[in-house]
Length: 108
Image 1 (cartoon, rainbow, N blue to C red):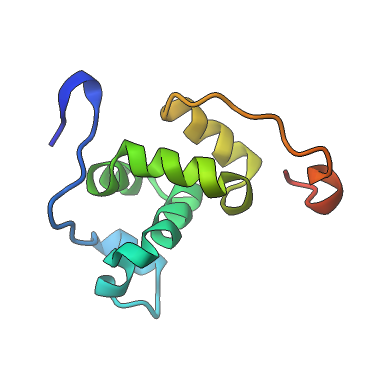
Image 2 (cartoon, rainbow, N blue to C red):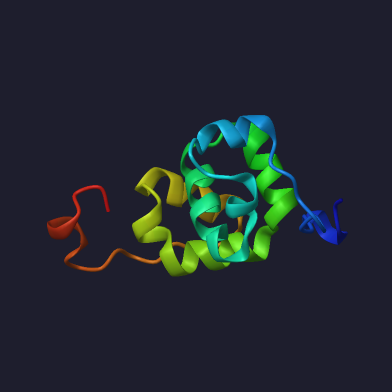
């Protein structure tokens, strides 16, 4: 499922692995796979997922959508540590935090 130059391509019709389903009790797999819930699924896995779950995420969603999520919501959806990890994995430069970020949210 890999494209050129080490790029992961999204799966045509991803299915949730059992370990991923267990992270989301109370949610139907088809709900989590719906486009409108992709950010919720991806952010939770980017923050808490195991290596196997993260490999699945990269295959199922792809690098570009994860980079877009990180650019749009990374500061709110991910811890500082996870954000730094994903910036590195996705080859993104880190932007300095907003000047008031530490006053509003100590983990920024």
